[in-house]
Image (spheres, rainbow, N blue to C red):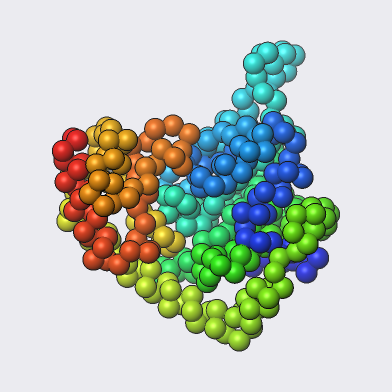
Length: 322
């Protein structure tokens, strides 16, 4: 649904490289980067390495809380006739939003249609550019049609959207892309030439063949069926083994279930004990701006049987620590 020309598209070596180029060439050091709390850890690390100031925006079942973002943008703005406090950051003109609206990593939440329109409207009103990470967009597996990307709603060039073949087809291809206003693409293309002389032509040719001969659509359709099956089996397992210990969301696509314990639990100890019994956990704290008493559970790589065995261990350890 994105209306663009070829000159508004830049092929990158994965979507993460697009973030790196944006960080080093478009954003001055000290820029405030707003991101969902929690958010994708690798992206946060890219921004931190480039000297950005990170600030978390709360989420709910509809995705990023636009009203909370509006409040954060208003902080530090001087009232009429009154100077801003000395410790206030004037974010206007020196801020950007990074968001994963579809199949959010790590929570699995997909932003509602109403919320998407509200966010684009706020972006225009506040002159807040948006980086939209669409790495998981093709893995929406519910029966209703996927919601429009933020870029499809963008009429003013405020949104840079990123995509990738890594999650839906092959991580090893290292093919990603960004769509933005032509001057931004030209600037980033110059930066990319300095980095690697361009993404692998062989990888681009391979992916292009998948797209044009129908194999990509066929493969992704099968992948989504399998992911949906594994999600459903994972949800049954959690209901059987974790009910009364934790609660969790029901993702509409992607790889992850976000689970939060009902009582405070020592996450470091949970991680250690589970690892000793052969289960590797991803504590939610590593994706967040503060402790959140949560775990990111992946149902995509493990078989349903492996997932069930791991949850057996998790439930036993959680009860020991409760």
